[in-house]
Image (cartoon, rainbow, N blue to C red):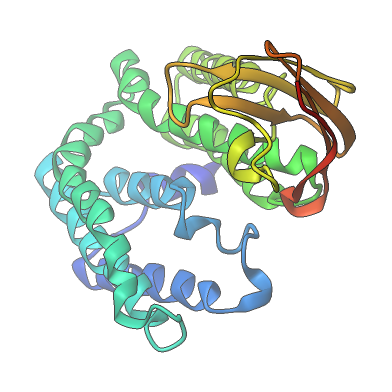
Length: 295
């Protein structure tokens, strides 16, 4: 426990050490993103999601003595590390310098780290309100954890390390920052509730993939001027719903597990269209027209 607490307040985080950490945090993920066989694994997730950045930001914040110091050091950390990730990839990525088109959203978030870290420093007070300050970060970790768990359940052990890391960091933050047993217990309960909420909203009963029927339709069989009713032969694999308000509009197929099924569309003009569909590894979706009867 003492080593965990040392991580969140026991490090002499000089500017020199911060700059070394900033460069390492940019170069290492950038290199990992350049290795083809690591693509879409836990080793490259931090190029797309926030779990490591939340962890490192809180380590920096809790090892500063003043809120302004925390704001300045966290801002500089992100200002250096984020562009470096893209810069390292320039020679190896097919986009080359155009890869920096992905940077502007991260730059906007870098600007937000200044006020965010200033406020975040008050977690070091270790009061009840410190749990509330920490809550957005633990909620983000819980959401990330359950999002990756969703994919892992479909194709295990895909992203298992990221799932475990997110869950571990949520509880490490509570154990490392707080000393009062009541606050630790409250923090752990909050984390468990967050994981439960996001499990049932982001994982349980949610489709692994959703696709609009028309772009997948190989023959343009569905007539946009005809109203259809539709059924799936196997709703454990795929279910259908008609999207009227959102985009894209039209019939959508929601895939819940690997397998095959038939989708039967019956038009109000008497026409019938039957699709053979399959959902396989790597979220591979296939549509074929098995039967087409005109009115």
